[in-house]
Amino acid sequence: TLSDDKINVGNHTCVATITNGNYNVTNATKNFSIVKRDVTLVWGSNEFIYDGATHNPEVVNAEGLVAGHYLTDLGLTLSAPKTIVGNYTCTATITNGNYNVTNATKPFSIIKRDVTLVWSGDEFVYDGTSHNPQVVSAEGLISGHSLSNLGLTYSAGKVNVGDYTCTATITNSNYNVTNSTKQFSIVKRNVTLVWSGDEFTYDGASHNPQVV
Image (cartoon, rainbow, N blue to C red):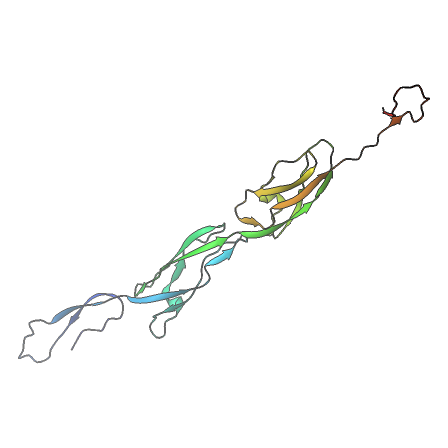
């Protein structure tokens, strides 16, 4: 007869015993091993749009499990999720010592969230001061964020008459501005001349009305 069968991964010894007292077994033990079973994780999405929440790829299944075992039998945990834009690696670990995960890491990305600026003012009358269009709001911000969260700055304002482009830049790297430029114009300022003298008596000299 043989000692009890083993189930779990490890190094074991099988012991053979005999009932026939006429014989002596010279090699009654046999060392043997049960090695880990490879499983392959089936990972879900690896790209997320920044939304202020934490993200990790999800393990949706595992291939190679023994009959009657499910994903929950692995004792699966994932490394800490991420929130801000960047490229990351998620690492899966298991507590079930009978399995070996062949693809325990999954690269993933959190990508920038698109926002659309709402611009105000694209035409100014020359007044000797500098002008730029202004951004009054932004569409697409996550809940709890306002325009101030973008870290918005503008290109240098303009003073003289002409057609120009204002460029908005942001310091918040979690957002991508879809309309960062705005065309605008500074137009000529109307002036009205005040004239004096519209009738002259001939005196042999030249005459013209004057602007006073």
